[in-house]
Amino acid sequence: MRFLFLIALLVATPSAFAQGLDKEGAIDTIVGSDVTTGEEAANKDEGRIIKAIENSSAAAAAVRRKFSLDKVEIVFIPDLDDKDTQIEAKLEQYKPQVTELRESIQGSAMFYHAVDSRSVQLNDILALEFDDNNGVTIFVKGRNPEGE
Image 1 (cartoon, one colour):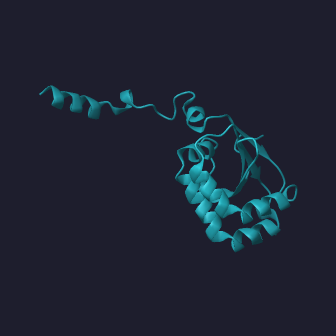
Image 2 (image 1 turned 30 degrees about the horizontal axis):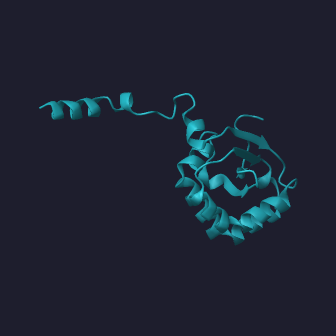
Image 3 (image 1 turned 120 degrees about the vertical axis):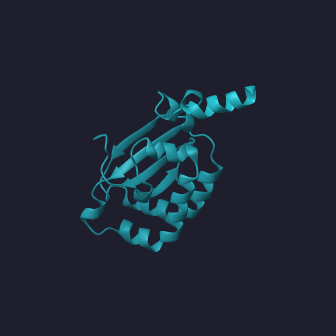
């Protein structure tokens, strides 16, 4: 009887026992670091973004292995649709690898919540690049919703 009461209590008030993502600091705890955002023109780091796209399969594997990050930077590329760039051609050429990367991000609570916390849609992720200091830069198509 006590067991049934306990189960009924848990079912009736699940939010009382679970930590929601709206709770202050929940996203930072999952990600393990602050998530910063910025914007830059497509042609500013075109070579760097293309190299990251070409490295999508290796990046996807690294995303699946990562369990902590010291720095997450999300860089929005607002003018990507304004003109034909080598970035768009490279995205088309590496479409299966970029899809694999997006799926790896979706499957990682840490990466997914980092991008989701900044209103980034998975289909807008172009590429990501790890640095030597346990940090990552994620390149995203579109405008920064935070207006930075």
